[in-house]
Image (cartoon, rainbow, N blue to C red; front, side):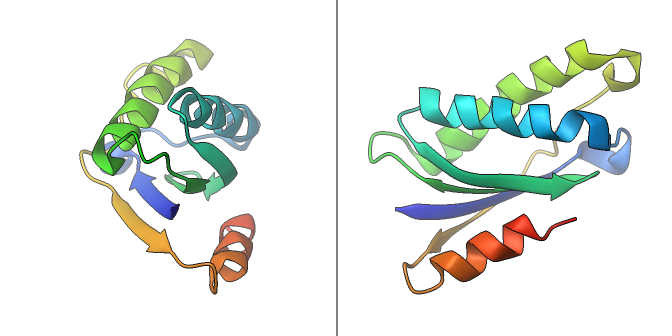
Length: 113
């Protein structure tokens, strides 16, 4: 199942710098892979992230997002003092994506910047 996931930085307290985004997205991709799912594209801006992935049938969406947010939040805190208070918001949104809009969704995520 294709899923488009979006979540936001908590309270806009810490922004994700351009210098750290590519590495963060690669790290998130590895988390998705570790959870038996397949990352297709990950992108975003300073205050939120978009993910398009193929979600494993062996994990619930809430658990996948929990794993992504928990591990990526810990990881980004190692990238400098400016991230010491970094946290993701409590919520998220997840949409199933049909094959008929897969390419349009992928393009939308690619063009986030």
